[in-house]
Image 1 (cartoon, rainbow, N blue to C red):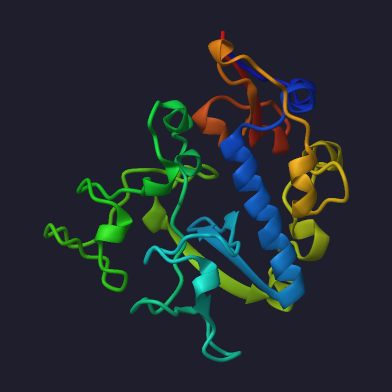
Image 2 (image 1 turned 180 degrees about the horizontal axis):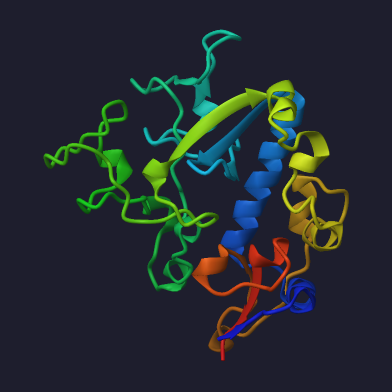
Length: 248
């Protein structure tokens, strides 16, 4: 596998191969999250204990209770968290819904793998959906959900994060991006134009051209990842999140 080491290699990888299917779905969801935030005025993020906004909360984002964000609602304008319409969940708590979100990029390539049945797991070996949505206890006797995975963006554990919902004003006071600056890849317009080539909208993301690669050669694409999960491009924060990988 060849790992991109410069921003130029990252740009070349995006232009020639497009994004891996899982990365495409992830970044489209992040774009949808940004659009929803600008329309509603509520910015939902999954934030680490170090203050990093690791993931934007999209309508399709999954809660620990296994329902989507779209299946939650705010009881009142002053409610800090949305509650679930379909279960006893009292507050939306983001949980990864794809193996790529925890760095398991190889799983979707396995024959017979079903991404829809994949679940983020606790150290007890059971998925989050086998734990109580309120108290986090597992039916096996496990007293609390302790993740066996790390965040793709910061490498901290799931329990080292919290799901936060805040207004644009609250984010501005805290010095956090809002509006178009909240969109994914907004810090590098060149790469963003390649990923969202038409009008920077999630709906246009599907127009990104994907290379037709023979199955025998494996997948060639660009993946989004933490620097410590596979190398880093010196002096370029954005490129440390988007890396070009080739099957050797």
